[in-house]
Length: 222
Image 1 (cartoon, rainbow, N blue to C red):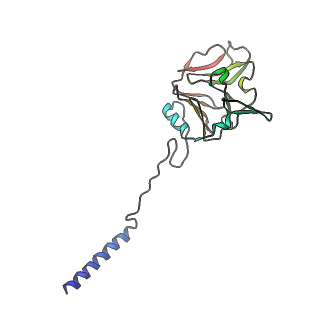
Image 2 (cartoon, rainbow, N blue to C red):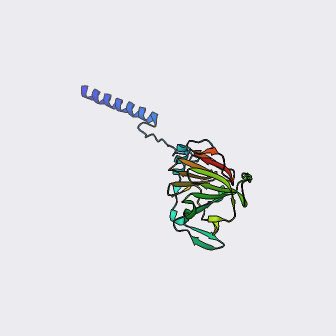
Image 3 (spheres, helix red, strand yellow):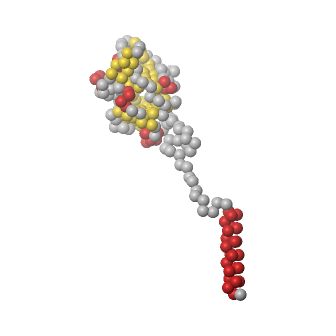
């Protein structure tokens, strides 16, 4: 009798335990947590750096892009004719209304860009020759916007291929990322960065406004 009563008690305990588990519905189920990558929200949307952003945030956002094959950007094209650039690179971002290239022979590898600016800087009295308000030079230490040019310079043979939105391109001390908000380029050596866009040029990091040299519209320097 005592053995039968013990068996009955064990069955009742097991039944109650099963009922409690069944009522919970989630007992022992794993918990999943989704963490958004740097520079994005949990939904996957990416927000480009705004004016005044810390250089560390700008760098992190640029590096979060998808690396493009630099080998594709060593040539320019004009009227169906392709010209190889050797070690230089060239690329364009239609959304930012910008075309960029390097010209190591004349500028030591600095980034030279032509931007279709909505409000380019006016021609200064010290400028001689054809004024190009959207001509931008960025060498890491300095940023100059607007220049008097008598020739197309490194753009004489055309522009480089399109850098896709979200892609990054690296060369020397630079890395650039294309975005709908503009082209963002960082120079690691000087911890400076620039946003190139038809809406305007933004500087980040050590770049501060300085008096523009003769023939230049606006200047910044570290």
